[in-house]
Image 1 (cartoon, rainbow, N blue to C red):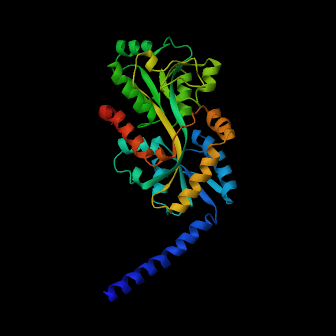
Image 2: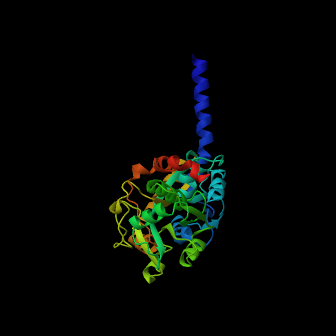
Image 3: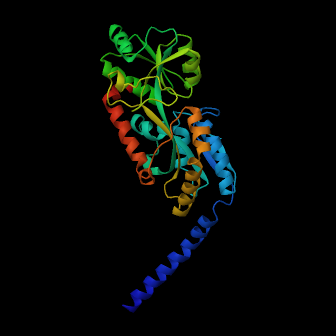
Length: 326
């Protein structure tokens, strides 16, 4: 018995000795610059949030937080890169629904899953708005439904890429209308809007920020908001539910993640720092709402299960239209 007690005591001492350097490293964190991987092109919607956050986070941590854009494959290249990075807190992800909710349900063999990440914060919700050309005769969802049913398989709509929220949501709406539309994918929102403005496509769903200036100028018309309530940026635009499409929400999000297995003290330090920044009125109004996004109202306890919940929502959206997404 004494032999076993001695052996167990030795094991416990060895574990404490091994854990000591990790605990010390976590306490000193960070001692060098932190990289924030943004899996989208530089200058896009993600950068509008990521770069101000990185600046303020670096000031709080006492080390630079350097934004690095790694775009491609509907954001999955950058997401996979972070999933395979060391879980030491020095590589963090500025991710979104594209790579962490939709892609796991639309693309096989990604090389990562939502279980590979720990959420630090959800910074913005990107509820989508349905827009048409300013000269279009379509003024409502009812008008759109009539047009689609009158010309099944002929009405072209734009998306920001295959498997994107704008693509999946429009296919789901076509299912509600009972008639197909033509999907025209683009490499991002800018070229999609350019062709919508030029009349080469008829309609698209987009986060509010990009089309908002064109809506204000009358070059585009917003005919529906795909949220549970009207947008603060476009309060005159009725929701889909108000126009006879109940229980249909098309909402993306931006958030910050670290690889699973990151030491708990580092996770806690980053979560506290980001929560402080995200809770400031200057950040909420000057960064989030200024870009047409909504500030999430998430309780801290909801954060842990956020990715799994969003993944389940995306699966429910994708499953009925999976054949149309191939």
